[in-house]
Picture 1 (tube, one colour):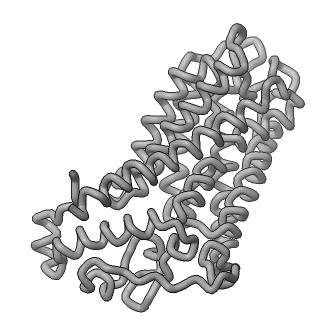
Picture 2 (picture 1 turned 90 degrees about the horizontal axis):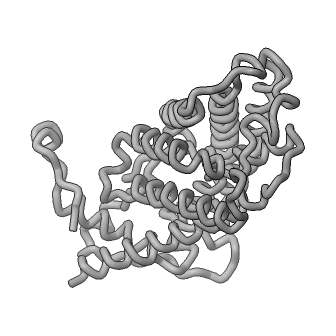
Length: 320
């Protein structure tokens, strides 16, 4: 089993770091994330925590108490549950703007890579893969420290199932993501050198299964591919993985690979917001339901599997 190990550089420059504290922090976090009670999902920051550590960091009082923690007893009211807490409006506004802008950037530059220079031109085989993977990587760097850069309702659903978000915050994320997708594709329509809405069937950047692929085959492909993406999301958020080091490059690789492999078959959506905006502008709804059912079902299965299998097995191993 892998634990985070304090490096020689940390020991030299940060001699106060205690290896036992690092491992005990992981254990307390795992117990919290595995909790079945909503008010144990999120951790309220205390004076000895940084403002951005409300999810993974654990107060030192818990670390020194033989790895034990005593969650507050639920009063049975929604106000007592942190799942229903109301974050400050400034934080919600910051998240909304970051996700709105991030998803707009994704749609603008990602779909721009699929626009030929003229209606008769032919794109290279990797144009979409390069544009989408590259802009996802850049967007993570731009807004990752502000909102964790979801830019995908499936990622937001994953965070909600893991207990990383209150419901109201998840709602803000999802509204921002769908709004940003509409804004981004709308800007692309305006700045394109010709009318991209009447040039191709089913439409530029519209996701639809390739001819010969049955709906259930397309649904399975989208569900499994989104599931792999969400497993990567869970792994990056898992503190045992090094706290998401080089996360942007990890997502660049998976988006590029899935675009090259799955793109020719289903369009490699993995994101209902990414599929909805082009469908609305082009009024193209051929098997559109696949790009909702597939990604969301893959998200639920992968998130619950990671939470109740990988994390549960790790907790059992540590308690031996």
